[in-house]
Amino acid sequence: MDMVNPYRLWQAMVYANVGGFENHAFNCYDCISYLHYANTYNIVLASLSVDSVANVSVTTDGRLASDANSGKDCDKLVDDIWNNLCVKGVHVVVRYVDLWNDNDFDTRYSMTVGSEKTVTVWAE
Image (cartoon, rainbow, N blue to C red; front, side, top):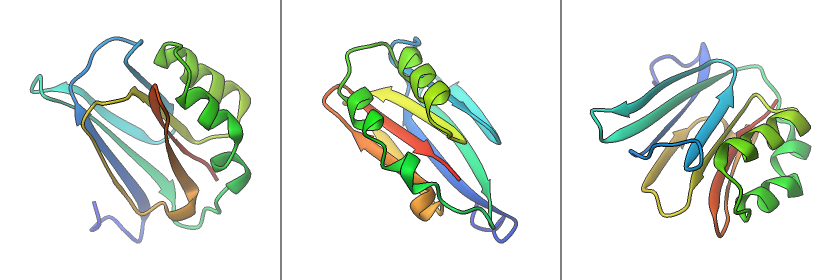
């Protein structure tokens, strides 16, 4: 993915295979996903323009912490964030799922680990 730069900024999220909208969900522009890959992983790849500017008011919004501590299903939380904040993408997964995240989004993204969910958003 680093070889694609300087054309796009990339984020890769890989996490243990879980199923059901109550356990994981995402919505985003410029994404590719490989869900249930080899019945072992879920993979979400996202990109942003290199000349994008971070929307820090979104990536630091209190809604993210509130949703990360919510017992609601992941798809409901994705809808909440997508419909109420100006994001390019949002990903929510239940806590205690083995998750790896690597990116060059810098301040364009934030990951909020709550008591119930892990919420990742990227915004410009």
